[in-house]
Length: 156
Ligand code: HEC
Image (cartoon, rainbow, N blue to C red; front, top):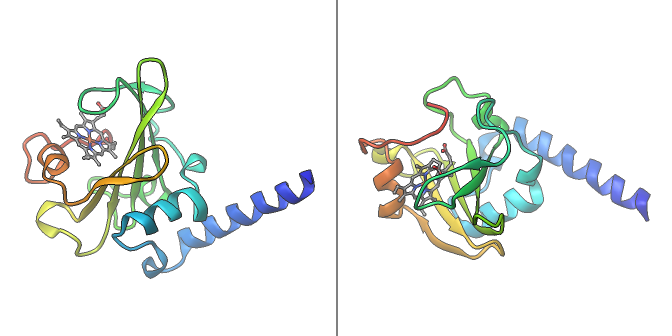
């Protein structure tokens, strides 16, 4: 049994590495279900990296939880910054003060998706993967959009 689990683990990692190197066309679409499947099954975000200056659990601000972890995929990590390159995904786990996972907020840079605001596809998931809101929510963009004075990305 343990051997089977190890083999599956290796397969997942292999698929993930392959996905990292194949064409952008193999990335998920700007669709909350495709993206959830990608970050939990195809290339599970828990195996991704942290920004070098933002490792592990960190204190955060409203409207996100008081504690968070931000995972970034290889495309985000290997971007000549700023800005991060297309195909970059950042997954932010938002925790309560008691370290209970409350929400997973994701930003995913998709070619031509929303050029005026940096081409980010935004999603807020429940820990179970239910997406609400998603797409181009005004409130996410207000704080994070490239037109915003408060453009927030931790790597800048
Ligand atoms: C009121 C401003 C505000 C709004 C609204 C907001 N955010 Fe954020 N966001 C922040 C701040 C500030 C941070 C930095 C981390 C922290 O303090 O929690 C952040 C960090 C993030 C990160 C981590 C990536 C990075 O580079 O910092 C993601 C992903 C994210 N937000 C997604 C979202 C999504 C999705 C929405 C909409 C559902 C949203 N945010 C709405 C202010 C906001």
